[in-house]
Length: 65
Image (cartoon, one colour):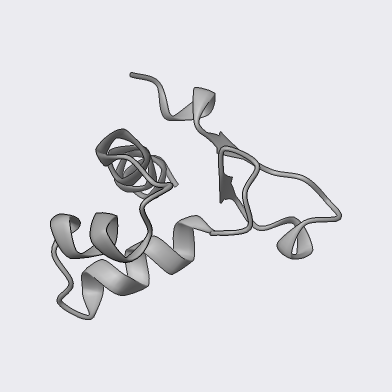
């Protein structure tokens, strides 16, 4: 999986912040949830439109930044 296939940046969406698959949830949002102690399973339960691959893409993007 390449995070470039999942993480998108659109100037008019969320002020150009990197988002997941063109949705309005940002990489920063997901990383903040993880940093606050949420598990991947908890995030997936709260945001059913996300996948485990989406979360892994956020981590890969952050590691690459």
